[in-house]
Image (tube, rainbow, N blue to C red):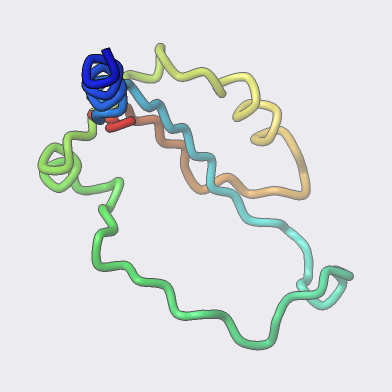
Length: 107
């Protein structure tokens, strides 16, 4: 009986694979104000960021190679927020991007 319980626990603890969808929406904007007038405090030096796995959202071939799919604007969820920001005098919108990726998650 102890062996059966041990085997059952080992079986339950094995990693399981599940396919999940991840949707990402990005709105990039710039403030229309002089940075000197902002009271935010930022570090003088920024840490180096490893961009070796970065993918350009403007390169469809790279996106497809990474399994990313651009969705049509009709499926975007942040359209109303984008319009509110577009009407804001203190901001300049640069672009909005929405993509989806299927990933296998090991739990």
